[in-house]
Each structure stands twice: as structure tokens, then as C-alpha cells.
Length: 337
Image (cartoon, rainbow, N blue to C red; front, side, top):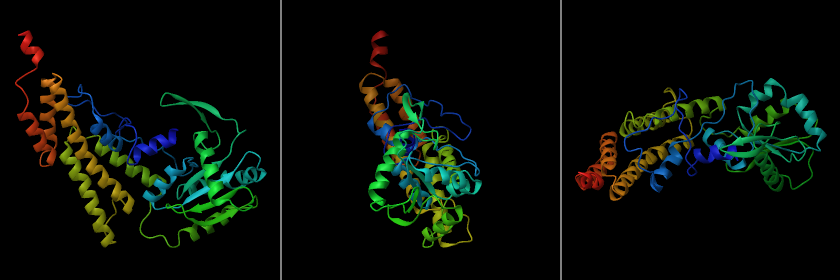
């Protein structure tokens, strides 16, 4: 569903999305864009062209419904998951909503964890929403697809609720899926959740990212990647490398400013650097295939652009070698002449 889609795009695999720059504009078509992208190019872009999670003010409560997405986010932010298990029949959920979930301090709390709605929700009045051309049931309680929070309800119940509990159940879980602590029941108040969060994070190592800080970092990455044709793949590849190097220096010297903050974010940026090279090599493959199909002029234009964009990187030589093997011009134009 929707939340799963953008998270899959943010992960190592998935379908390509439209890359949106920091100013909200989309990347302009580059040389050879009339050439169809092949498998390698699309695979690389599934990493490079990701949708951003929704913006949230610190006063706005933020839920997610997708368990696998929550695990990935928790790892990259270095924060625990808090899964709230409940259903429509729970009077306790209504009570805790009134005294806890509706309060500003809980909204702020939701930015320091990954808050997962593990909710049955068979009678909660879902609405319909178009998501990527598909009509889905959308949850008015959590602002997530209903399929997501229902699937999480089954998983959390089967994994963490094998004994009797009082609704609603709050399970604090590590990014590796291990329970850290829990709190339950209709008498729960916010100070108890604060205590459990301290317990869940007492052995946390290194820096961590609030939701807002993490989203701002994603915006910076997306904005930089959006310039890869204008500035060149080499420049963007180099800039991301500088971010990684700066983060490693900051880990060794606490006086230095952090750039990526967590090991998982460093690993992701390294994946993006590899994806930049893969995309360039994929575009070279696409150009060669296009030339074989008779689009020699378009292939030459694309290969020349790649050679310039990837200057100093392996794809530059690959593009130049492919250029040298191209015929003089389009077969169709030679026949017409």
C-alpha cells in the first residue's frame, strides 16, 4: 500500500518513483531521454528516485502502519519502534486516546520513535483514497492505509501478545525486532511511556535522528541526487563521498558536526553512490541497445553526456568505448539521403 510503496523505494529494491527536488520541481529530461530505460537503469533508479515521507510538525502526531517499513526506519534513525496493539472493540483504546494520544506531549513523543498502529480496525469508518492510480482503504485514525495497520496487528499480536494483556498494548521493539519493554492497559498515562522509552534506549549507542531531522536529511539527499544530470554524476558521487567521510571523522571526534548521524544512514548513502555508477552503466547499455535498433544519433548524444557527467569514474571510459564503436549515423537517415 502507500506507506509500503515509498518505503520500498527508499530501501534497496522497488519501483521507480518521481524524484522531487528540494524546491518541489522534478528533474528535467536529459540527453537521450527518448531512449527507453532498461533493467539495469530502472534497478538503479529504484534506489536513487525515492519519495519522501510526509512532513510533520512537532505538534502533529505521526503514525505508520507498515511493520517492515518501521523496522527499516528505526534502524536508519537509531530509535525504537513503539507498536500500539488494539482494535475497534477496545474501550481502553478510546480512554488512552482521550488522555494520552490526543495530547501535545504524545505528538512530540511520536517523533522520537517509530510509532506503529497495530490495529484491527474492522469498524473504524475507513475512507477511500487514490494512491498511485489505485483505490485503497485509508484510515482516518492513523492516516495510513488500512491494509498496513491490519497486517501489523496480526504480526504484532502473533509475535508479542502470546499471553493475556490489557488493551491497548504498547510494545517497545528494537530495529532487529526484539522486544525491549512494554506498557499496557486503559490506566496508562504519558509519564509511564516516558519511563519505558528511557528504559528502551538506555543502552542505545551513538547518535539518533528525530523524525524531522531524518526527513530533512532525506530532503538534502533527494535534492542533491536531482542535480546528477546538471552537475554530473561525478560531482554528486564525490559530494556523497564527502558526507560519508565527514561522518566517519565526526564519529572519531565528537567536536565535529555530524552529517549522517547513524551507521545505517552511512550504509544507505554508500548504496546510493554505487547506484549512481550502476545507473550510468545502465544508461550506456540502453544507448548501445538503441544504436542497434537504429537510434544512432540519440545513442551518441546519450553516451557523450554520460562521458561528461561521469568524468573520472569508470562509466566515463565505458561510455567513450561505446561511442567509438558506433556507426557514422542513423541507418534511416542514410537511406533517406
